[in-house]
Image 1 (cartoon, rainbow, N blue to C red):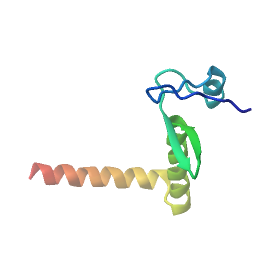
Image 2 (spheres, rainbow, N blue to C red):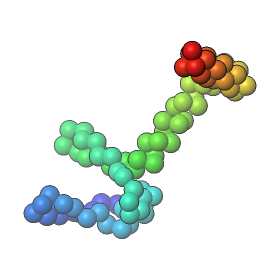
Image 3 (spheres, helix red, strand yellow):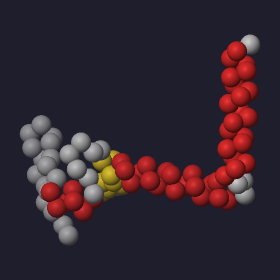
Length: 87
């Protein structure tokens, strides 16, 4: 679906409610606008965070390190940091 949006004097726009619903955003949410040539692509910030999480999960999965190994390494590093701070 296509919409026409007017730019007001103070460079403000109002997005149609249907657009916001389709994007899954509500009042108070943030939207990233990426300019590609003469086009603007709007993307909900929630989606960006989910994509980042998926990318991190993919990297962990491909690393071959188990969740248990990762947790043990994090605990070991935290202990080292705490010991360094205490000394």
